[in-house]
Image (cartoon, rainbow, N blue to C red):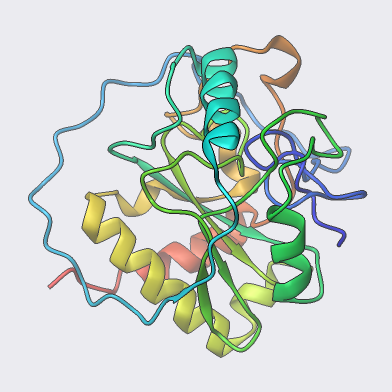
Length: 241
């Protein structure tokens, strides 16, 4: 699996690119880091959720050991002594750089140090959308998951099986499922459309927070701003009614 997983919440890519965190930005690409201190969480409106799409449960192992490692990671990177994801404010869209859901699952399931940042727990994502549009949930929404450095403490991660932004925008079945899932989640948690971002936009999120100096500017190249502008335009047309 070519996933840039090391970066996933931790760093980023499998071998070359690890799902989520590990995707490195190509040379010449710049991003302006956000303030290291996240803004005070906004008061969210009452939950008026849109329709929940069909989701296939395919949990990866997340035993006490992995939870303890997640809490230690959160303490080290965010100053938060907990493995729990509470009141999320961001949804991060990714693509896997792997050829199949099975390959992606097999990357996330083992609790081993990632290939990019060499940290524990292993990288993961809350959801993975296959090329046929099937939505799989791998991690409960109340657990932090390593998919985007600087944002794991407050972000839900959605992976899409593929090797480019076009794997999301150019596949009607994937895009339909992705928008349905993202809309349900953003309505459920009161997340603003502008806080639905691509991994490549992580450094400019107002919620970006990273205490480890070497990772303050770390991000990946998947789901760039131009692609996400198209995605957010489509998302903004969906309601929470």
